[in-house]
Image (cartoon, rainbow, N blue to C red; front, top):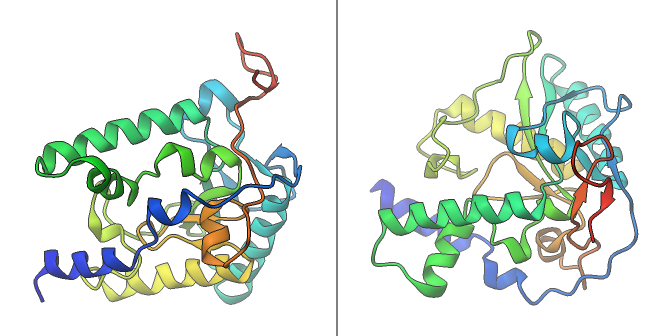
Length: 238
């Protein structure tokens, strides 16, 4: 089958921005905390969040427990693999810039798109800021690494490739299988998956609420900087 046609068929099955926008939020007060040594996997914060949280990755406290459970499931089944967390809480300003930049890229590649159609197309790989899970502290991006600490190949390096879709039939069989290993362990721990991004999983945000048919999301978005950041105040920003 034609690759473009198949991907278009997959996209019709994805949850959309419009599926999330009306979901209410009732924040349960679960605190935002750094992922500490109790999680024995690897934690690597990415560059855009360094000004806000330094080398630490923050998530809601319940998410730490769930990551520990997901890692245990992984090690019990595939002891040669390790779990690496590369993104958790994302400051709303970082999310806004990532979405704006990617939306401009989508528009340049597809000049016929506009309005809600453009918004939905961009949302497949970078969430619309108002419904994004990372700014709640409930979403995480995770990788598999091997015993040498090297990333296990799960997809192309191109950030905007549609081959990142979890169930793409155009990737190698062993890569597809590794994605299912990761997905299984994260689902077993209680996370909701994202079919357009094999690395993204969520708990307590609007995506989780929709996936598990919950009446409301558990986490509001937060504007936060860790106390050790120079020139910014720690805790929730006013």
